[in-house]
Length: 294
Image (cartoon, rainbow, N blue to C red; front, side, top):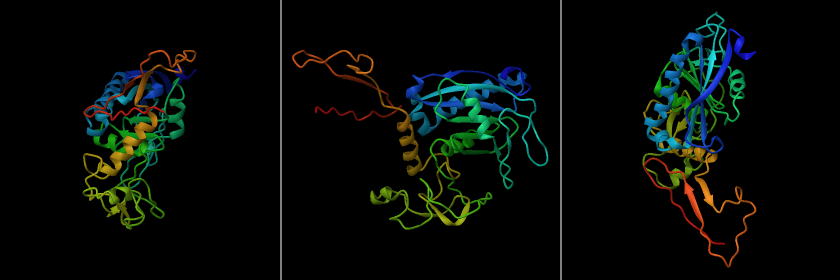
C-alpha cells in the first residue's frame, strides 16, 4: 500500500556495509522531492554522502565505524512548502528559516520512513532536491541539493548535538543556553569545555559570538570550526563527535572465548587457554589496548 501512492516509500538498500548494524553508526540517506524517474539521480547523491564521510578528516578517521543505507522515496511534487505554496513530498520539505531560507523536513515523516528498516540508530540525512542550505537536530540532518560542507555541519547538529558557532543572525529567539560547544557565560571555570581550559589546550578559550548572536553567547575557538564557517571541527566539537561514535560502537569487535556466542563453554583453570580480542581500527591511529587480570 505504501508503494502505490503518488508520494510513497519504495524500499531500501545498503550503500556500504562495514559491519553488523548493531555495532556501527547507521547513516540512513533518504530523498525528498524525487519522483519515480529521479531514483538514479538520488542514488548518485546518496553515494556522494558516503564519499563526504570518507574524505572528511574526522569522519574519515572513523569511516569503518559507519554503515550507510539508502531509503528510496518518491514524491508527487517537486519543490518545498513555503512562501504561500504547498507541496506534497515524501518528507514534507519546507522553508524552515525566514531569514536565510534554509530547508527542513517533517521529523515525524522522516522517522516513519526510518521505521521501515529492521534496524536503525535514529539518524538520517535527508536530501531535499529543490531546497537550499540546511537544518539539523534530533538525529535528522537536512541538506538542500548537494552541498558537502553543509552536510557535515548539519550532521554535527543531528549526530553530535553541536550548536552553531557563527554569530550571523538567523532568527534565533529566547535566551542563549549552554551546550557542548556554546556557552551562555564567558567564565572559563563554568564553560562546558572547562576541561580543555584546565588542560591548557592551545587556542581554546571563550570567544564572543555564537548561536546566531553577536552578544550573550561564547564559543571555544576564534571561529575556524565547521560549526561556524571553517572546514574542520574545533577540538571541543571533535571530542564530542568521537565520544558520540563510541557511545554507539564498541571498539571490541570480537573476542575469544566469547561468553555470548559460546555460553556453555567453561574455562577451567588447569587447562591452557588464550584470550584474544579483535578491535576496530581508526584510519590513521592505533587504539591503546590494555589487559587486566582480576
